Structures are given as C-alpha cells and as structure tokens.
Image 1 (spheres, rainbow, N blue to C red):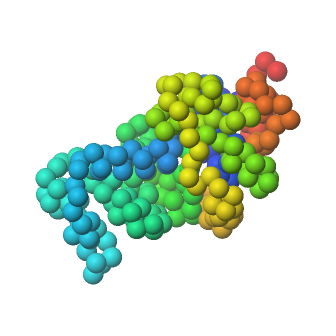
Image 2 (cartoon, rainbow, N blue to C red; image 1 turned 60 degrees about the vertical axis):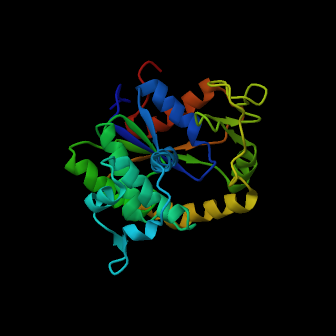
Length: 267
C-alpha cells in the first residue's frame, strides 16, 4: 500500500506550539485539504454574534433548571434573526465572557456546523478533537455522514522547545497567518499575505503555555488513545528540525505517512 493521491479528512494534533501549522500547510498544498481550525471557528461564530449587536443579558437564553440553553428556535425568536451562526456565537459567548471552559457538547455543535459547511470532507482538523468526548462525537458524525478520518498526524516536540517556539510566535490579527521570528519571520513586522502588523497572542506567555501543555496530557492524550483503539492510525512527525526549510518539513510529513502507507511512490 502506498501513500494515496487524495485524502478524505485528517486530524492534525500535538501540544500547543509543537509546530502543527507548517505540517498542516504541507497537507493543504500536497492534497488540497482545507484547514478547519477550532480557533478560527470560534472567532468566526463570536464575530457573527458581535456583529449582530445584541447587548442584553445572555442569561435570558438559559434554562437554568436544566442547565442548558433554551431551544434554538426560541433564541432566534427572541433575537429576531434566523441566522444560525449568530445563535452558535451566542452560545460560545456565554462561556467565553465568563472565562469558562466551553463544554464539549457546545464545541461539538459548533464543530458540526463548520464541518457540514465543507461537506464533511477535505479537511485538516486543527484543534479538534481535544477530549475523549469530542473524539467519540467525531467518529459518530463521520459514520452518520458516510465519510472518514484517514489518519492522525501527531506533531511531537519537547516542552522546552515549545516554550521557546511559542514565545516567539506572532499572529496576523487580520487574516490569521502564523509566523515565527526565527523560522518563518514576517516582513519587517508585517504579514506577508495582507500587510497587517503582526502581534503576539496574549496567551503566549510561559505560564499559560505550561497550562496548555498540561491540558494536552490530561485531556487530549486520552482522546488520541481512544481514536487509535477505534482503528484510526497515527503517524508521528517531529516538530523540531535541525534545519527548518519548506522541503525539509514536506519530507518529514511524507516520511511520517510512510509509517502508515509505506514508501512514497517515486522515492
């Protein structure tokens, strides 16, 4: 069996800051996949809600007796909109503005809407699933939709490498492009795609990075083990390269896929 020419869906996982983005870029360029990022997904739904302009209390949309939101149709009636993205953004906003972890069932609901918009195919899943419950939901979803997850690309790296890498990461606030001051520098502090000034994320501090590293160990590792037990193969690729070039990154990804499919044709 050789590496296929096309892929259905791929999960790209690893500790936050391990080096997932360059490997996702390879999958996008090599296989025409689209990147479905939970971070971008949340920002999109939150922006839809914020743009709608509702300023009242979100408590009115909660059924506290059942610790749940009222039905979506009732939320739409209250808001005076039929935009499902506004409703999804409202649900995310409720937790975010309180500094609470967005529950799995809400994350699953947002993810399903975003995944459905792409026809449940051709996606590099970035940041999902992060928990065993999300992993279980994903497998049920792909089974219902007669699609598949081909494999998991697990980008590995040491905690210390990640801390060094992440504190020097920069993000374009306009288009979301990711840079690194050493490995993939912006152009004089500006995004090479849209020209906006890049910024450091507020949660790219060492304390917050270590918290995310611990979360990966306690929440995401069990999810990965569950997926592997359910028959989803895992290919590991190091996020640390002695010489960081696009070709070396591409080669490292293809070599990782050989763990599953055998040697790349033509090699």
